[in-house]
Image (cartoon, rainbow, N blue to C red; front, side):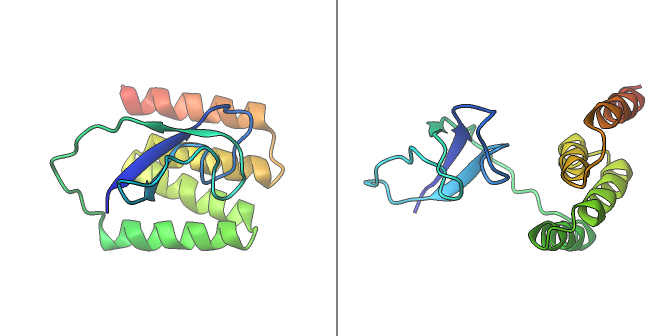
Length: 127
């Protein structure tokens, strides 16, 4: 069965599943999704780039990803944020850094301070 990619129609109305886009396995004859399966907000199918290479994450990266997801599922936002932030710095992953910032916000940290931190670190990464 094909894997289709979706993104939110309105970025202000999203959940963690659809915020950064998601993949969904469907049969070819199935109608495209119009709502996120988790939050019910509007989504649209996007044309995905053909990926010719398969990239496997290291066992360490996969383990940390599962641990972050477990913390998020339990609502332990500060634990998830700190682990994601530390690992993002180590592997220079901006998407994981943004996930850390999102979790810091959910833990009650000041978003303005976090954005400044992310910009400073992103500048360091580019140089």
